[in-house]
Image 1 (cartoon, rainbow, N blue to C red):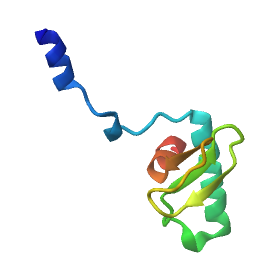
Image 2 (image 1 turned 90 degrees about the horizontal axis):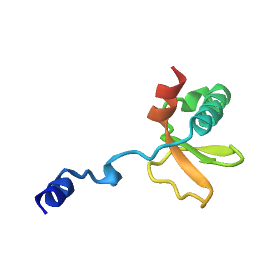
Image 3 (image 1 turned 135 degrees about the vertical axis):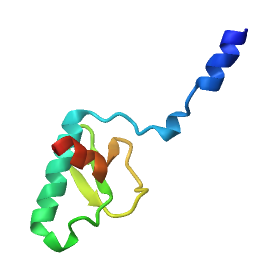
Length: 86
């Protein structure tokens, strides 16, 4: 019984951890973001990430922190895109 209680105390809340995203989705989000930055250089650095469809890899650059996503979409934050590209 003690081990069960101890395990619950050490359990971390998954809300504090970012969800795992497929590396192919991150690469596609990076291509979307960097293409956007090439076309709109005045907006570089203002985005918060990319909302991208996990199946088709089509997405849009997002400028607010909590986007409304469709069921097949995920949000890839800018810091995750940048850390994956280098």
